[in-house]
Image 1 (spheres, each protein chain N blue to C red):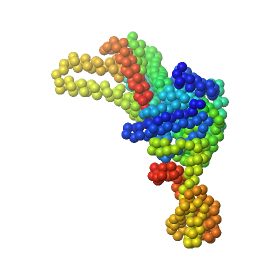
Image 2: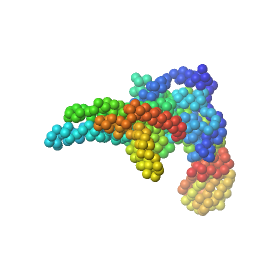
Image 3: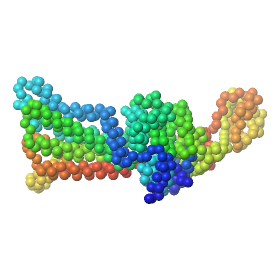
Image 4: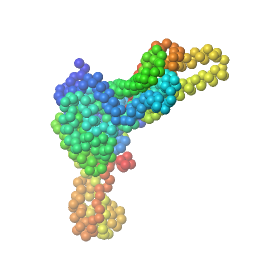
Length: 315
Length: 278
């Protein structure tokens, strides 16, 4: 069976800078894949090559088995949102979708109905006759999502669809994406947020500095990030030696560090028991002020995958 | 059938919902989009005002003057804005069509669609040409009507002057459009600079060459004549014909030069846009 997207030995250079180096990956039909990596990893470059906005230096890319150099046919069943495009600010969502519908072959007598369907799907129907230029970033993002859905595509390609949105906007876009799932539709979404991948995708490909780091099931990946979690805890009262002794013997704790009289960190070599830790603090009567995971999931992931601290890259 | 053809057929029949329209249909969609964009901006209305400026001025003059307007005006004055219209109209309509797509990031909406860049290029070019030629025709038509109303006699060459103007508009529109594929901003200024400033600069250079070298006056005139056949001079030539001065070269020579100039710039713009990486 043909894959939805096949990328083989893809290399893209801009002068001396190699943005992608020999990347090979595939998105199967019906699969929702997250393309995960820090800023500058090459995610957007990869999506731009797939969607024909830039040409590869070497390697091949095919969509539904069609070589992407035949852009028109390769993109026929694809809906894209690449680098937060701007819709024409004087146009209303209805006008934007009319243009997209006509150019993509939605019959004239079905355009209105299809427009309503997709605008309702992205919760923008009530704003259908307002100019896009007056919309917030989140609303604009939903209009661009609507244009990607207009031809009822088999494949969706999204480049950081929640970038620049507030938490509510992020949640809404993720909900919309998750709601689009169906057996014959594939999604390739780039992001630097692990939780986005875990909420929306079945599989993940991690790239870093233009190279493929790993590709696999999201659950496997999450299991990997669960290892070596470090929690930083601040207490209301001074720590006691008894508490530190109990902490070292706590389940899965691989190491502890006393940062000051009130703050300590504990590293876990397996799944961390946060509730148990809170109970331990309570038992010693120390009072819990804060409990944070040190670094984001993504930082932990990169450390786990590459064995080095990429915090600077991630920031 | 190639493997790509077979895969494309499989992909569409498997889904079976919408089929891409022919490329000509997609060109029309892009054309309609650009015409709608024009309709929502202020520039066409401003340029219609420019085209109507002379007739409006004549009307005001008629009200203010004591005697008949035809005693004060001659055809050259009625069409005096012609060279500027040939420069300004294409610059405004075509000079920012593509650059605004890149600057405002709206190209990111269209380029990943199943549309070739050639389709996009042709659709937008057709819209720019339609509006440029229409407003030139409107301005010219109004000039003719007003001349008739006020009894100002136009020479027989007027029709040929109109033809020359349309060819000039085609050439300058093509140039402005090609420049808009290169510059993110400033293509309007670049077009106006080329159409208005370039001939002056070239003539100034030639004058210096004439003064510091031993070239004969005939040679200088010959070079100036060749420069004047460029489309940037078409407006002045057309105006001269309306004034009854005829044209230095056969009108066909100007038309051929304008056509070649226009096609060369269209090919240049097409080439540059196809190579553009976003």
